[in-house]
Image (cartoon, rainbow, N blue to C red; front, side, top):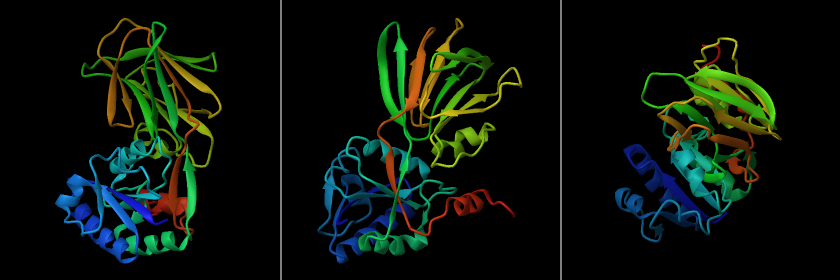
Amino acid sequence: MRHIGIITKRSDPRALEATRELAEWLVAHRCAVTVVHEIAKAASIPIGCAARQSQESLPVGQDLVVVIGGDGTFIAAARAVEEVDVPLLGINMGRLGFLTDTSRDSMFDAMEQVLAGTYRIEERMRLSVEVVRQGKTPLICRVLNDVVVHKGELARMMEFDVAMDDQFVFSSRADGLIVSTPTGSTAYALSAGGPIIHPGLNAILLVPICPHTLTNRPIVVPGTGTACITLTANSVDRLLTLDGQAGFPLSDGDQILVRRSSHPLRVLHAPSRNHYTVLREKLRWGE
């Protein structure tokens, strides 16, 4: 891997400093480095690095994209590489960092392993999401963490039906529903009371948000199926949130179809990386 792009959290001075240091290191190791114009200017990137106009265009032609920031930056980078299938390596400048799990202090060690070819590629499930409205499909997209059907600003519950492969599962009155990948099980779904699912499992997690009936519990279903959420009640102000970074307004009768995407995300890890160690450290188990 010799063509390496860097995506950075623009608002974090520490991330900009790390970007400059990594770019200098990579150039010294005869790598072609590409960043976004705005980052090149803000971080004083060394001469010899290429710059692209946008984050979306940066992954084209790269062997690897390094993400310097937190999990939010990583998710945005995952959207940028959707069409080019470039693997990501996350350098954590945030707090938890389940996705950006390489520490700032071990950044150069990790890159040495990458250049030496001693790394492990892990595939993370994405979800394909479609909104069906009166026979049309106004939205088709993919998410890495989760898709959330929820009420808007008004403090009222929404009503919906959930089915799997045309088999009715349950009806609910709740603040909403989280449909999550195993990767997303440590994000919003965890805060809402869902279980932690190993990222290697082919499964989809359904987590009701503050259900009116307390027996509506989180449920894990096979990743081979299609979840269908149908909005049933006459109501207003409901939204679909995609990975916590984009929204889409919903209407009565809308159906949200969620299934495993045929385009997983590829993530680079050090060979010694252990998922259970990450959980212990990030969630502070045993303290």
